[in-house]
Image (cartoon, rainbow, N blue to C red; front, side, top):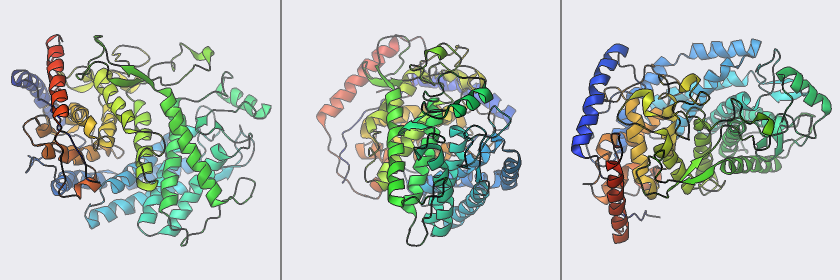
Length: 568
């Protein structure tokens, strides 16, 4: 159906404040860029040839970054890393998994890439994925003490374990590579890769065998289920020096990482032409598993994982509190949640892991929501098939704008809070890569929310606000450029964001554009193919947005900080 859109006003900053902010940041950024040699994640952006988003220019903008990705990412390093893992089973192999996942997602995102570049990306990605798949084993882990299949990993003990989080990374990578192989017509290779992931997920999660499974109900992942053999519980407690709450849910990102492996496998199994490939999956005891029954169980796992995510998110409303910096109307809904929900484990309350979700780990909740929505839209007929809806992405957007992006008068880590509560000093939330000098690096994953919500007219202003607050820190030549790291092979979210939002400077001042022009960069690929569409200009929508602008500007006058670049 053709999109029906109402006009939305996203007034820009008052010119004086905008120039003051840009001048202050620009001077420091020029010095900073000279010091680091302008090694940003993505290259500078050309002036848009048109105020309307254009696929050809978007392709041009990212082609150099993708070429740099193929040249900078050392396949030999990934393969060497994998060969080491095959011997020592150390968890450092994750970097190779993340490379495969990132490239597979790029290939999905940018179907119009030129054939030569696309084939190069695919060939490189598949080589690493096949090497990862070759490390799949059947073994008898110390803790379960029964045959299990997957990618065992040394976590906090001297022997390898079947870990939800680390194994989930490899499972997702191999699953997405399987989908790409199927989309490239190689269904036998795709099926081979998919079978490994399917075996891992069955033994670790889908089976009802309490000697093996970590899942107590669909999506709820624990370390050792309550009904598991006593010896399994004792062996885990001895290995990890912990005995409390082993039958309670793991940290949110651990369970969701296994869920993302399940999402990847569902994508692969739906892409594979099973008339050209053989399904022969058996359980760990050698009993053949029916494909229809298996895929239904897998689907229930993903639905359950989505339910776990949504149940973990507490809906809040913006208020007049000084902590709430969202520039939209008061009473707007947003999400606040914990890194690990210890409501069922009071013994752990107050510990290092009992904290509001931090800016680093928030990427897992955001990624899962985006990926499960895409799975629904591309393979199950509707994006909200698995329960994650547009309103959830709107709330995530407001979370970022309300509590995570806290000071736009500065660049770098000081722009962001450490966690979803808006804290900038908490010892638990602000440790490791959340310390001040590094905090902006994980902020790039916040762009996933903007990418996922780009086709939602009601989220337009928030999408532009988030993009213009985060993406410039990673674009060479931008006054806000802040990163000190060179191209990393797992950071393709920046390339994806640049593709959809290369017009971010122009989009900060979209008030003068026509409705069609304002919405063009935020439409899906499918919508862009509709070269003409009807826009219904609603007077109520215009009045509402004007009121938002007035309210926000009044609020702005009372803030002792430079205002945000985008206001309602």
